Length: 315
Ligand SMILES: [Zn+2]
Image (cartoon, rainbow, N blue to C red; front, side):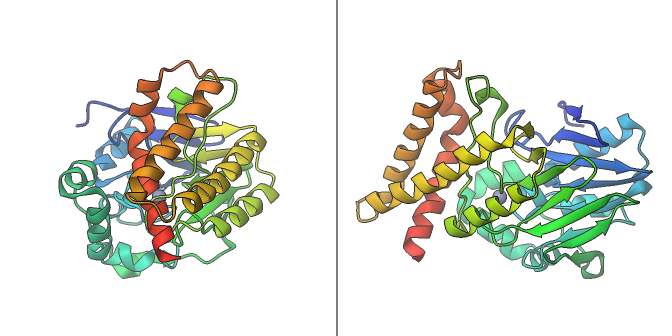
């Protein structure tokens, strides 16, 4: 049993569960309950499955009530635990973006892709192994698919930008959006300043700034009252977050153009965007020193630089 179980009731039958990837407060998934039906939005990794089962037990929720597993996209911090959960919840259906479905049924290629990004050692430690899901239990959901979740409407939206296999879910009851990685990453430790800090994860290999900016407009047009982000937690007052995210995506594109023909481009991009993050946070009086900021975001900025560099190469 994992020694770390942390979850928080957010109202409206929604529980945020820390999936304990690398450190507390890094990655979450959401349990949604309505009239006796339950489901998970995002899953954590295969190492998180025991945590999710323990949370169900503590909340007195029967495993048989779990009807849907809904990874927002197939990156492993969101979908790595899907196969393990589907083994436990034998009556559940996996709802997945059409571009992600084959990777859930046969995860070999997904595993190779992630190995290339993270390296073997980190991959094993972070994600464990991937478990294939029988094709007949996988349902592809198209843009604007509406799920009747026991009388609660969940609207699925195709949201490219971070990844082409990403959907977001709008929950009418909470007026909340489950945004996976599409509405950025915002860590609790860095949100104690004048304004919250949020950044776009430009993880390899499908970063698409133009599509992303359009996606954000589409999400904001729904006038959501709150977002539930995987990294990490619930956020309200979305206008300034949207503004910062939009500006950062534009800034990234600019930094890339400046460094496009330089030697060691990836490292330079990484240094530049890490420094931009630090500058913003210090300016916001975030209450955390530079070394701590670095320890919290330098791996993300490395991954972002990989993704940005890949994007430049592919242009
Ligand atoms: Zn992702």
